[in-house]
Length: 93
Image (cartoon, rainbow, N blue to C red; front, side, top):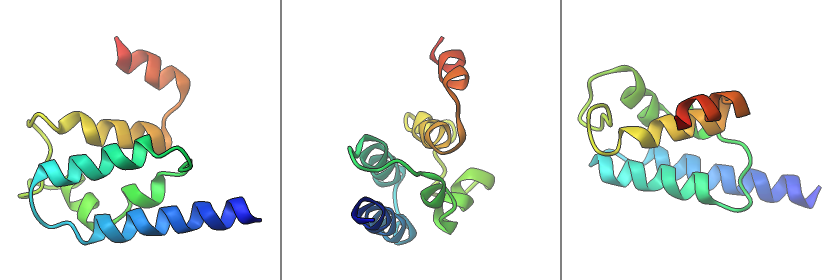
């Protein structure tokens, strides 16, 4: 039970931080990198569903990562949230 509680706390922290982001793509990419590198975070769909990230994913938005040096960050978060080993191997090449 302690592991589940800790996981929930970590997710909540990243969700709150992602929801507060309304500035530059580097900050968003940095948050994604930090989340995907976190040693105790194993669930990512909650972070991906944060409205500020949803705007980035679906619209041409000032925070958009599309076409920037940070565009792969969102791809990595999607892979961590919904991907499979086969998806990873296919994207790796």
